[in-house]
Length: 153
Image (cartoon, rainbow, N blue to C red; front, side, top):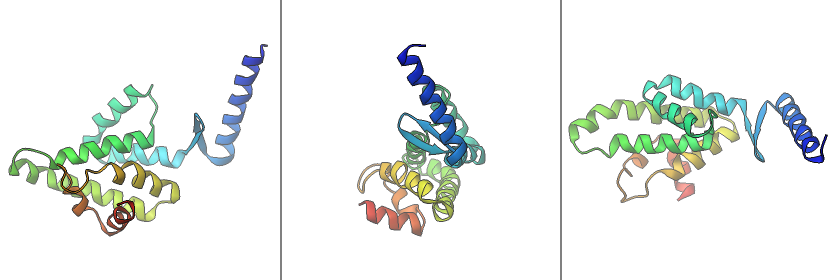
């Protein structure tokens, strides 16, 4: 076996060991818990409108869920719900929007540090800044996410 094949074999054993010991999946040098991956899948199942977003996400990422990238996709989807042309469209989307924001608020409050970081870094930080189109979402988040937005700036 060549040195390169030995290195890859050792890397594979390390990844499998890491997953067994920590319940995490290693992608590159990052370790993502199965719990975080499950959160993304559960969110897409809970909100059927996110199904196509997750499908495209997986197609673009070799059938892999990348939670931080997916939450960025969710941010754009959420902003799209408020950044529509007519008041009638906004009213139609409002129930879905408040439901998604409530879901994220609950997940943030109940989540561990990894989940809170995911929501903060990949959802909140991607929201439009005040004055930008779609920035109304900032005023619609719950108290915990609002407090985190103040920390982020």
